[in-house]
Every structure is written in C-alpha cells, then in structure tokens.
Amino acid sequence: MKGNPAKGAGYLLKGLSMLPDPAIRPFVLIPLIVNILLFVGAIWLLITQFDVWIDFLLGYLPDWASFLEFLLWPLFALMVLVVVYYSFTLVANLIAAPFNGFLSEKVERKLRGEVVTDEGWQAIIALVPRAIGRELSKLAYYLPRFVLLLVLTFIPVLNIAAPFLWFLFGAWMMAIQYCDYPMDNNKVSFKQMKELLKARRLTSVGFGGLVQLGMMIPVLNLVLMPAAVVGATCYWVEEHIGDHLGAENSARPRLDR
Image (cartoon, rainbow, N blue to C red; front, top):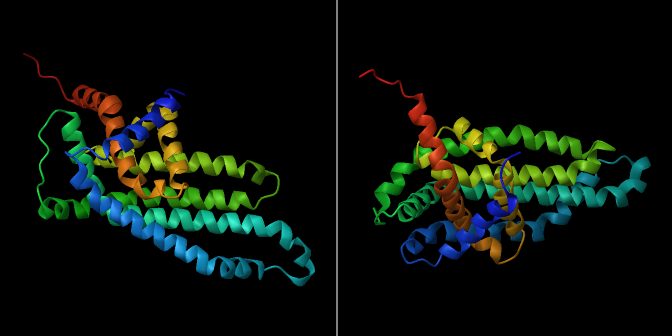
C-alpha cells in the first residue's frame, strides 16, 4: 500500500493551524456552529437516554440467559456509543455539507494563490442540491459496510477483530467524508474520488484516523469539522490535483496536427 500515515495525519494538523487565518476565518463560522450544536445534542441524548437504550437491548435476553448481562453490557454500551457517534456525524455532515463545500473552495483558492472573496448566500444555496446528492452517495456506500461490521461484532471469535476493523473503517470513512468536499468542487466523481484515495491509502487512513481520534476528544471535537475540511483541501491540492489533471489530459483524444 502506498502513502504515509504520518503525512496524512499532518494534513489535519495543518487544517487546525489554518483556522485562524483571516482569509478563511469567516467561512469557518457556520460549519463550526453546526458541529457545536449537534455534538452538544449528542452528549445530551447520551446522558438522558443511555441507560434506557441499554436496558432495552438487555431486555431481549431470555430469563435463563440473565447471567450473561455482565458480559453483554460492555458490548451493548459500545454499540450504543458507536451508533450515536456515527449517526450524529452523518447528520452534522449532511446539514453542513454546502457550507463545508464553500469553505473548501475558499481554502483551495488561497492555496493556489487566488484572491478569496465572500460570494454571499447565493453561492452557498447553489451548492445545496449537489452537496446533498453527494452526501447521499456517501451514505449509500457507508450503510452496508456499517451493517456488516455490526453483525461481525456479535459473532464469537470473529468479534475479537471488531475494534480494529471499526477503527480502520472509521478512518477510511472520515477520509472519504472530508476529502470529498474539494474533489466534488473539482467535478471528481464519487468513484474517481475513492480511486484517488486508494492510490495513497496509507496517507488517507492516516488523515482519517486522526480525524476520528480527534472527534473523541472533548472541546477539540467542536472545531474538528472545519479543520478536517481545510486539512482535506490541503491534501487534495498538494497530492491529488496533479493526478486528477494528468488523468483528465490522458483521457482526452489527441488531434493530429
């Protein structure tokens, strides 16, 4: 596998360091607010409903198997945390998708030496249909794999590998989630986007893995969405845009002089 996981993780750190930049700071605000509100909502839901959900799941155990409760409680607790985490991440990304696309566009302009200007709400609204369609494509890719891993988590022996597989899956999905914004802006199809990320799989997983870990750290997770968008855009500009333009040029028919 090609790539460098440390280099991938470095793109997220670069994204964090760029957030205070006056050229892009105004475009960070809305994704930041969306992320804060939804993470606060997720925390409130876990605090108020966690025990209810665990009791509901344990309620499916027959009386004769009640002695297994102490073994199954940690597994059910992990499942609830994973489902809530991924559900709220998906909702946050769906709501913030047009704003994230707009932020990515502004960051790319800055990185490529162009003037960054605020084009107003009309530019953001124009992104909405395409951004939502792209999020639905990601959801269609994500759900079957999520269900498969969830089933694997309950299979004896095989479930020993489940935590490792969950982490790798989460890292890959975070890379897809955030690298898609700059690639979508540049008319890269969802299929092409996955191929580009696979070409530097270790770099992609390094980036997505640090995003996933950062999402679990209180306070830091509140600013991580815009930081990941900025970092993914840096990744695109520095490593993928040349590959994409080269592939486009090679695909064009050559005209004989």
